[in-house]
Image 1 (cartoon, one colour):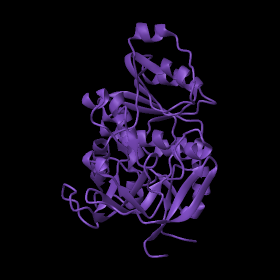
Image 2 (cartoon, rainbow, N blue to C red; image 1 turned 180 degrees about the horizontal axis):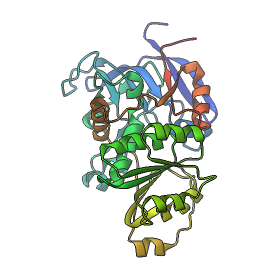
Image 3 (spheres, helix red, strand yellow; image 1 turned 120 degrees about the vertical axis):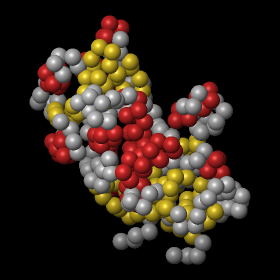
Image 4 (cartoon, rainbow, N blue to C red; image 1 turned 135 degrees about the vertical axis):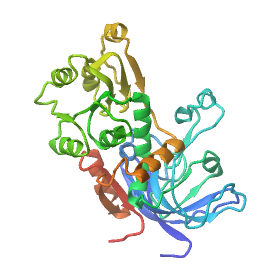
Length: 353
């Protein structure tokens, strides 16, 4: 490899990614350079590829990654160290909008994101701007957490925020609709409380089995079983304390609100296609006094909490990485994500086959 150059996966426009040699980013006194170990492939990366998530090109994408600190600017505050293992929470909040002032930095009005507006982690090196450092987004990885799992800690943190929105308590019945990567993360993270019952609804047998192995008490095949009837039987006809929707299918969302008990919570985690409309009887919300809310993004603090849970052994995500691919194999990694094959795929920018 030419000195001063690095390998990177570069988005050139819809349906167009290339692996290129790019200059290693030069940092100023207020920035950090991270040597990337692995980069996680997200559904949003596929949306960028398809053109449904619009970003400027050319851009090095990748907003989930782990690595080590390679260089530290002389004016960077804190006790960062060369060689320190880190993951970088990608969303940079402004600190000034009404959401930030209310402490809800995850939905900052003016946020920018590494991998969207700023070059990201599908490369051998990534520059961390001072604004991200000021937000506390450079997060140390515990020794017990592998680089592979650390690379997917950002979506685990997003899932953790969803668990916060569900407001689970000991003894609750929790229903997870969809056992894709986020749904399985929710299975794991729900272990942070002592649930009365954990119920997972998922049409793919392999993923139902994974949910069962991870601790689900009841798994339901919605194609061949009556999910509402099973939930009502399991709860003495009361319904679930909280339901979280981890699949972006409007009809599933419409059906699932009937699973919630009076006074329960209904959390919409998964995004739906732009312009989606759903039909819900408002009387269901009105007479049952349901709390209907969303869950969007997360925070570096959520990521730190996830690392604590992983370090403690309460949460085990070791089965979540379904494949490690070179940059040249990005299409395979993206296709696996798009076609719901496996759980999470990650890219290794250093290996060349």
